[in-house]
Amino acid sequence: MDKSKIKFFTSKYAELDNEELAELVYRANELADEAREALKEVVLSKGLKFEPQKPIEVIEPATVDESELNKSLKKGGLSFFSKFFFIMLFIGPAQNLTKNMSTPYGFSVAWTAVTAGLLVAIPGFLGYKLGKLVVDGIIDNESSNYAQKVTKLQVTLLLLVVMFFIIFAATAP
Image 1 (tube, helix red, strand yellow):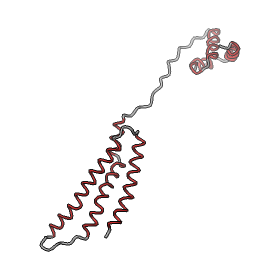
Image 2 (image 1 turned 90 degrees about the vertical axis):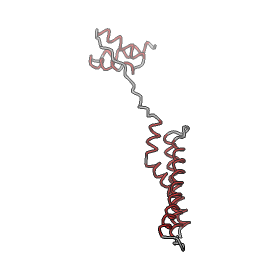
Image 3 (image 1 turned 30 degrees about the vertical axis):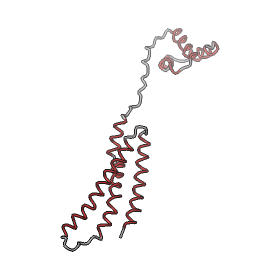
Image 4 (image 1 turned 120 degrees about the vertical axis):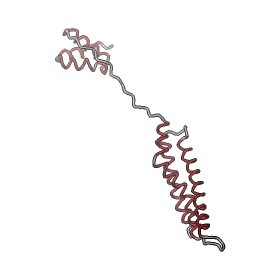
């Protein structure tokens, strides 16, 4: 340690009153080695005794379990709307195709309604399955962190919305 620095701090600390010295003692772990040594000398020379300060506990930020983030991402609006647009991507063209369906000779209106319903339900189910597969694949990817997963879902949703409007417009009657 540098003796000249210790002398400088000793003279500086000798001018302080007891309250100011007490503050320095409680902040001693923040001081340089020379300043700490000078403080020790001044406190001993004045015959003061201070209770040692408890070490400061550093509280680490709470770590959030990755599985909890994944669960919240799966239940969140971003994954919901991504799955929704996967469904709509399949249902949209099917709806446009069923608009022009007419009742063929010999078939009842009920049969046409069932057929039209199936033409919407089956693509909707396929869209749901594909959407769930893609969204869950993005969320369950262990090599991506939470922010990357959110970004991938946002890009997926944006592409799905654009594709939906293009396909819906292309299949419109």
